[in-house]
Image (cartoon, rainbow, N blue to C red):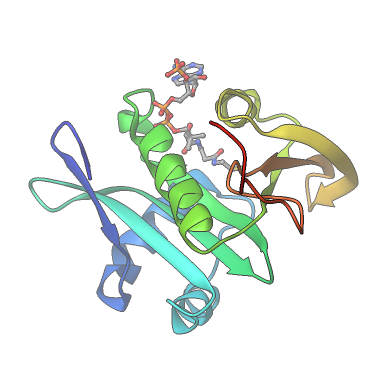
Amino acid sequence: MSTGDVTLRTMSEADLPGVLRLEEVLFPEDSWSEEMLRAELADQPRTRHYVVAQEAGGELVGYAGLAAAGGQADVQTIGVLPGRQGSGIGAALLTELLDEAARRGSEAVFLEVRADNDRARLLYERFGFQRVGLRKRYYQPSGVDAIVMRRVLATARPIGFSREGQTP
Ligand SMILES: CC(C)(COP(=O)(O)OP(=O)(O)OC[C@H]1O[C@@H](n2cnc3c(N)ncnc32)[C@H](O)[C@@H]1OP(=O)(O)O)[C@@H](O)C(=O)NCCC(=O)NCCS
């Protein structure tokens, strides 16, 4: 899919240098190492789905990753280059992760967001995520709390539910 001149595609190992540069700019306090990202990609596509947002000129301007197993999915990470934030790329990345979670049959998607990250929290709320918990002093060394959010997917059906015999 594409947002203006930005295209979303599956992340590969060749993207790691660009993703790590973004990671350091976006999460200077607790950026993921190359080893952590490699470990995530090693489990793709089995339990992971990572995507990058790439400009027509080739520059990576965003990325996001999903972990999905046993009916539950988690947004592992999401970020957009500061100069390109506010133009819909984050929403496009999140849409892709939620679509993938639904394709994989996940019943709910969870994520953690820093309590001081209003911008990300607003985006998640707009996408139907609701606060379900708080992890005190989760982020170190800052000691900022993590808000746990969940979105139940529309595809989820109670066990035994059947539409047979019902009119739409
Ligand atoms: C959170 C983040 C991924 C959103 O990406 P984005 O490309 O800026 O998001 P979008 O342009 O799709 O905007 C989605 C929503 O973000 C909010 N938003 C966007 N621009 C904003 C701005 N300038 N000021 C405040 N909120 C803004 C709005 O709620 C917007 O909804 P709207 O389209 O109805 O206005 C991005 O801000 C980011 O990378 N932040 C730093 C890393 C981070 O915090 N990641 C999340 C960790 S949990």
